[in-house]
Image (cartoon, rainbow, N blue to C red; front, side, top):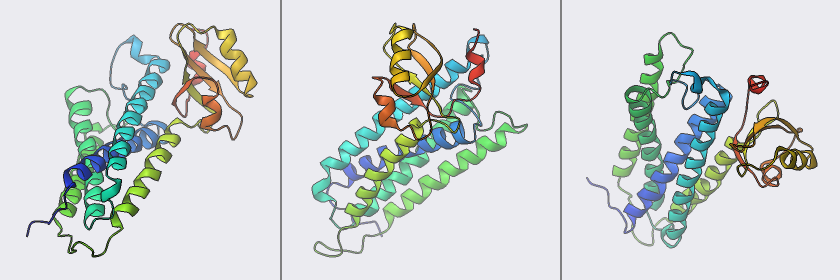
Length: 261
């Protein structure tokens, strides 16, 4: 039997779907790019420019910046739905949207980034890259199927019945997405992060601002406004923003590659 959907179900699906895309992308960027370091966004491209770690990490940072925009759009849609979150079935619709959005992210990333454009593969160091790409694709299928299945389950409630599920799901999403975004921009285990400042901001000015926050400028380029900074333990995102810069990425390994360019 087809599910009975409350008015606003399409808006709920959009809200959940956008947040699902953001969470799927943050999962990729945080776990695979930063923690496991299996690939960067453009690891599959050949040629001298793509061997520069600055280019690779900058691409990862811009990837996270785009995800922030998607997350903000999803949270804005969630805010517009705030008056309907207590309606029966809305929590299920939001959760289904998150699963579908995350699943579609994995599917599109696998088909477009891995196979059509060859931007990267899940494990660049594997002798069987196709196997890992297929596992990623299957994960996308499973998440999408779970979301569609959840969407088709009848709510089993009437107006005035059990409510509040949508509000709980919305609160969880509203907390989870900013946390994931913050983790993506945190300094890495070696205390280093990548920052973006206005172009042509003199290195002396950047050095002074970093030093004022107890950081150390490792390397960078004033023309592009990209800098690698080592922070003391416990330095948070708010402190980085005190530079007037945009944190692009967390762990930055192999920073010695930037020296003597």
